Length: 252
View 1 (cartoon, rainbow, N blue to C red):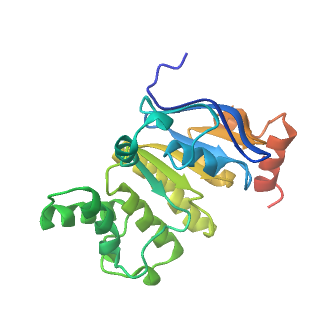
View 2 (view 1 turned 120 degrees about the horizontal axis):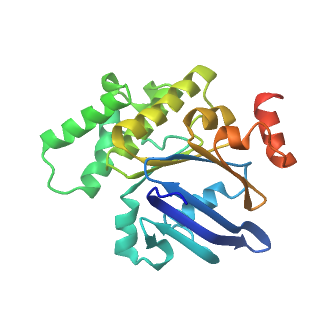
C-alpha cells in the first residue's frame, strides 16, 4: 500500500447530465508533490472532475476529498478557503486585456490577502515573474505577449496566492512544439520550486510523458489505465488506450 500523503482522494465518483453518464464510479488519488496527468478526449469528463474538486459542481454519488475534507460537505466559507489552496491555470491564460502584467498579478493578491504593503506586493510579483522567466514583461500588456509568454504569466498569476495544488487545463494547447517543451519544463520547475501537487489535464501525450509522474486515462466515464507512462503506454492492451497513443505518436 502506498504510504505517501494523499492530497486528493476520489472514490466511486458519479456524475450525470440527464441521460449522459459522464463519470461512472471513478477512483483516483493525487499524492503530495506529484504531477498527475489526466488524459482523455474532449467531452470525456476531465473538466467535470476538476469542477467537482473545487465545488463548482456536485457529484451524484461517491466521495471527493481534498486535504481530507469532503468538498460537497463544505459551507461557503470553508469552500472559499479551500479554493485559495488550489490554483487553476486556464487554457487561454485568462489574463485581463486592459491590465498590465503587473496589474494582472496584483489583482488576485490584493483581493484575497489583506494588509500587504506596496513593497510586499512588488516583491511577490517580481519573484514570480522571475520564477517563470519573464521579469522584463512586468509593464507589458497581454496583447504584447506571445502565446507561450501568456501561458507563463497565467501560471505566475495562479501561483501568486501560494496554492498547494495546481490544476493545468490543456497547458500546451495551440503552441508550437518548441514552446510546448518550454511550458512542460515550466510545469516541472513549478513543482520543484513551489512544492506543489498538480493535475495536468491534456490530450497531448508528449506533454503527459514529459510532465507526469503518473497517467490516468479517462474514457467512457471510467479510468481505463492508471500508472507511469511506461506502464500505460505504448504496450496498452485496451484498444481505446492504444488508439490514443497511436493518434499522438504514430498518426500525427
